[in-house]
Length: 124
Image (cartoon, rainbow, N blue to C red):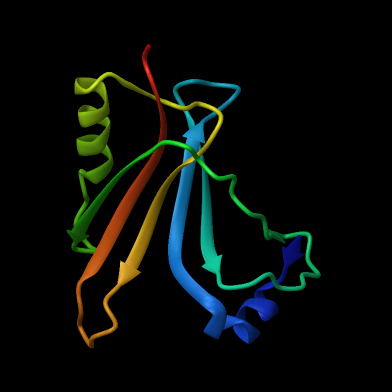
């Protein structure tokens, strides 16, 4: 499904946290492909070739790390989780994107949190 920016404005009550997804480029291992996304509470009608609506597949095993972050300071959350994966003999799945979910506290001037989610498998 696809949707337009005007649809986004109409549906903003249904929006959940913002998300960034990444995975290695299929054409160059030194590059990453990025997507910016929103979670939706329900499916919405779309009418644009610019934006897409899709459901991410269920993952049987995911490494996650939740951390409070300052939106204006670089975070090492992804690096910290990747090091833990390496130290504990897990492998990042290449065919599914990693995800960073950004959640803003509902309180005025509240904290921002990032949850890094990386699909993994054992190195057995």
